[in-house]
Length: 444
Image (cartoon, rainbow, N blue to C red; front, side, top):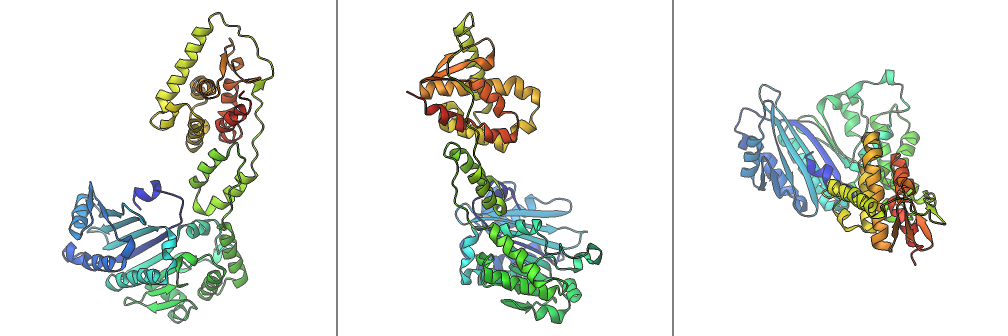
């Protein structure tokens, strides 16, 4: 896949296709790819590519695809990316091997959202596209599936109950996707008659001896109980060594992992936690929401009922040094966290998210964190309390004792920053977001 899928929106599931075949290297490239273009253009419909990505971006056309392939020609292969600038999103790649390598054609397609494929007609068009490509290009294998299902399959193998010494490597079917094209070698290994008698929505023999198998009419309903029963029946038919009840139970556990969980986060950390869930794999997201629903951060203890009097000779100079620390943090992070310049509650939440996403306490040297980041963060946190909650600094010689008075309490931003930066878990337990909301309650 090209980079768009990795960096693009991560909130919706998507349908992904991998397709591997051979092609005629002896003919002109335009001629060799004519069936690819024709089939794509006649079947893609609403997810038709709009953008061609070579050394620069072009509007989709056959000519621009050929140009981009030439631009990205390497010693062993050439490739091109195809995408869309509008919804639905598309991340698609085409790669061709070059002589003297074997003549291989690889196509990867990712269409988001998966819900696009709730419609039978659209799914039939997708199946028709794969069938047509496989009829023109001798296919080695292909599979189309939900991204979430692929992620879940990695963590719950249907082969777990089989003795590894009995496995036959590539001759054994590990998973049955929504759409499958089993290559001739695998068909012969399983048995052509058995393969063609698989209980499924569609089973069809292709020109080069491969078999096209579609489990269920629509791709988006893969996790329904009816689709899981069909998937288990097909899998056990192709793998008689597997137990139907065990396979079905594993598939139903995958479906259970995708049942939506309503976010009910602790209100003081909800702005922060709601940002985190989309950072997890789709297959993990609902479990993480449930974990965050149960999470209760410790009540902030970085405060004193009575202020320690200032013990510095020149408070103005000390406050100026705090300002320098805070400005240094802003200078270092303003491109990655633009809102840091606003010094608001939202800025603190954005910092929480940034430090968590970067695994900051684990990735960076402890000497740098303790000597630079933590003091700067404490000064910035204190400045936000002063600016947004009407606080007043009470500087002390020992930095962690320096306070910001808000209402009837004095708060210790440097101490909070030190505890916050101890580990990635402490970013959750001592978040800046929660600290601000706790202090806010005491604003007069």
